Length: 158
Image (tube, rainbow, N blue to C red; front, top):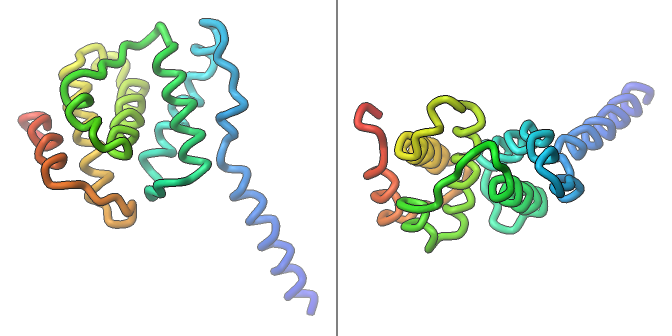
């Protein structure tokens, strides 16, 4: 009986621990330029979360991370994010665009020197998104037309 109670309590702690992994992005204040620099790691965390967890169309955690990431990307002065070219072309699918935005932020924050080149960033972002979409665990259905658009922007040496 004691073992059963111990197991039950450990499972309870496990569920609480898992629930606390998701950061409450809605509580992050982005009011002055210093806030954007201070929350750079959180922006990377939000981007990583979005492109490493299975896709769920209506999900509070994903939605909060995306809203925060969008606010951070549009307000930061330390990085330039270009939403032209392929981003405009895939904007017909808001779910795909959200993955693209997260992948762009992740690539830019992890590859600061290379990310100054918008063409390179676009290519690598397309590669990240295709990798995400090709993994059946992520539960994301990519339309053939949009797949072709992404594939057309891949780097020559893949």
